[in-house]
Length: 121
Image (cartoon, rainbow, N blue to C red; front, side, top):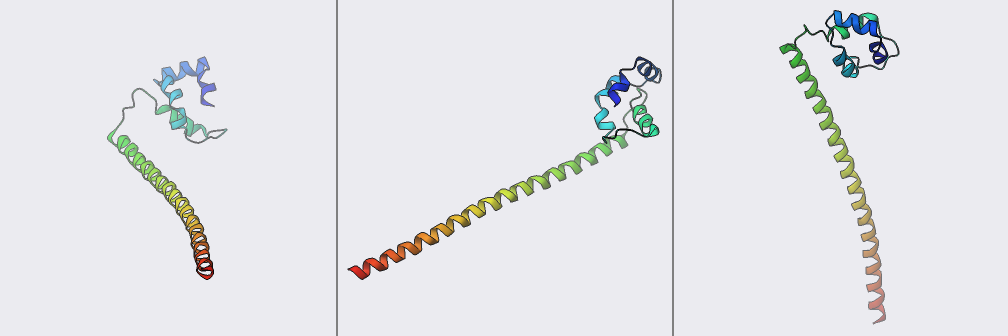
Protein backbone atom coordinates (compact mmCIF):
# COMPACT_ATOMS: atom_id res chain seq x y z
CA UNK A 1 0.00 0.00 0.00
CA UNK A 2 1.47 3.32 -1.05
CA UNK A 3 0.29 5.09 2.10
CA UNK A 4 2.26 2.76 4.34
CA UNK A 5 5.37 3.30 2.19
CA UNK A 6 4.99 7.07 2.33
CA UNK A 7 4.99 7.19 6.13
CA UNK A 8 8.49 5.73 6.18
CA UNK A 9 10.78 8.71 6.92
CA UNK A 10 13.65 7.27 4.88
CA UNK A 11 11.41 6.81 1.86
CA UNK A 12 10.06 10.35 2.19
CA UNK A 13 13.59 11.72 2.47
CA UNK A 14 14.76 9.76 -0.58
CA UNK A 15 11.76 10.88 -2.64
CA UNK A 16 12.32 14.48 -1.58
CA UNK A 17 15.92 14.21 -2.80
CA UNK A 18 14.54 13.01 -6.15
CA UNK A 19 12.19 16.03 -6.12
CA UNK A 20 9.09 13.84 -5.90
CA UNK A 21 6.05 15.64 -4.49
CA UNK A 22 5.22 13.10 -1.78
CA UNK A 23 2.03 14.85 -0.68
CA UNK A 24 0.65 14.87 -4.26
CA UNK A 25 1.75 11.28 -4.73
CA UNK A 26 -0.25 10.19 -1.70
CA UNK A 27 -3.22 12.32 -2.69
CA UNK A 28 -3.38 10.98 -6.27
CA UNK A 29 -2.17 7.43 -5.62
CA UNK A 30 -5.55 5.92 -6.42
CA UNK A 31 -5.48 7.61 -9.83
CA UNK A 32 -1.89 6.87 -10.77
CA UNK A 33 -1.83 3.36 -9.38
CA UNK A 34 -5.23 2.50 -10.83
CA UNK A 35 -5.33 -1.20 -10.13
CA UNK A 36 -5.93 -2.79 -6.78
CA UNK A 37 -2.94 -5.11 -6.76
CA UNK A 38 -1.43 -6.49 -3.59
CA UNK A 39 2.00 -6.22 -5.20
CA UNK A 40 3.32 -3.96 -7.96
CA UNK A 41 6.11 -4.55 -10.39
CA UNK A 42 8.85 -2.28 -9.04
CA UNK A 43 9.41 -0.61 -12.43
CA UNK A 44 5.71 0.31 -12.69
CA UNK A 45 5.80 1.66 -9.14
CA UNK A 46 8.97 3.72 -9.73
CA UNK A 47 7.59 5.09 -13.02
CA UNK A 48 4.41 6.12 -11.22
CA UNK A 49 6.39 7.86 -8.47
CA UNK A 50 8.62 9.66 -10.98
CA UNK A 51 5.54 11.20 -12.57
CA UNK A 52 5.33 13.32 -9.42
CA UNK A 53 8.73 14.92 -9.82
CA UNK A 54 8.47 18.69 -9.60
CA UNK A 55 10.56 18.96 -12.77
CA UNK A 56 7.78 17.21 -14.73
CA UNK A 57 5.48 19.74 -16.32
CA UNK A 58 2.21 18.83 -17.96
CA UNK A 59 2.50 18.72 -21.73
CA UNK A 60 -0.08 19.26 -24.43
CA UNK A 61 0.06 15.49 -24.94
CA UNK A 62 -0.84 14.94 -21.26
CA UNK A 63 -3.78 17.31 -21.51
CA UNK A 64 -4.94 15.71 -24.77
CA UNK A 65 -4.86 12.29 -23.11
CA UNK A 66 -6.93 13.59 -20.20
CA UNK A 67 -9.39 15.18 -22.60
CA UNK A 68 -9.72 11.93 -24.56
CA UNK A 69 -10.24 9.90 -21.39
CA UNK A 70 -12.84 12.38 -20.15
CA UNK A 71 -14.72 12.19 -23.47
CA UNK A 72 -14.77 8.39 -23.24
CA UNK A 73 -16.07 8.55 -19.68
CA UNK A 74 -18.81 10.96 -20.76
CA UNK A 75 -19.85 8.60 -23.59
CA UNK A 76 -20.00 5.70 -21.15
CA UNK A 77 -22.09 7.74 -18.71
CA UNK A 78 -24.44 8.84 -21.51
CA UNK A 79 -24.88 5.22 -22.59
CA UNK A 80 -25.60 4.23 -19.01
CA UNK A 81 -28.10 7.08 -18.60
CA UNK A 82 -29.83 6.00 -21.82
CA UNK A 83 -29.96 2.42 -20.56
CA UNK A 84 -31.50 3.54 -17.26
CA UNK A 85 -34.04 5.71 -19.11
CA UNK A 86 -34.97 2.80 -21.37
CA UNK A 87 -35.44 0.56 -18.34
CA UNK A 88 -37.72 3.17 -16.77
CA UNK A 89 -39.66 3.52 -20.04
CA UNK A 90 -39.98 -0.26 -20.22
CA UNK A 91 -41.25 -0.36 -16.66
CA UNK A 92 -43.76 2.41 -17.40
CA UNK A 93 -44.88 0.56 -20.53
CA UNK A 94 -45.37 -2.65 -18.57
CA UNK A 95 -47.51 -0.78 -16.05
CA UNK A 96 -49.54 0.79 -18.85
CA UNK A 97 -50.04 -2.58 -20.54
CA UNK A 98 -51.07 -4.07 -17.23
CA UNK A 99 -53.60 -1.28 -16.77
CA UNK A 100 -54.89 -1.85 -20.27
CA UNK A 101 -55.42 -5.51 -19.42
CA UNK A 102 -57.51 -4.42 -16.44
CA UNK A 103 -59.41 -1.95 -18.64
CA UNK A 104 -60.15 -4.72 -21.09
CA UNK A 105 -61.58 -6.84 -18.28
CA UNK A 106 -63.71 -3.87 -17.13
CA UNK A 107 -64.98 -3.31 -20.69
CA UNK A 108 -65.89 -6.99 -20.96
CA UNK A 109 -67.71 -6.88 -17.62
CA UNK A 110 -69.53 -3.68 -18.66
CA UNK A 111 -70.61 -5.27 -21.94
CA UNK A 112 -71.82 -8.33 -20.05
CA UNK A 113 -73.83 -6.15 -17.62
CA UNK A 114 -75.40 -4.23 -20.55
CA UNK A 115 -76.34 -7.50 -22.24
CA UNK A 116 -77.98 -8.75 -19.06
CA UNK A 117 -79.84 -5.48 -18.54
CA UNK A 118 -81.19 -5.50 -22.06
CA UNK A 119 -82.35 -9.08 -21.55
CA UNK A 120 -84.22 -8.14 -18.38
CA UNK A 121 -85.93 -5.06 -19.84
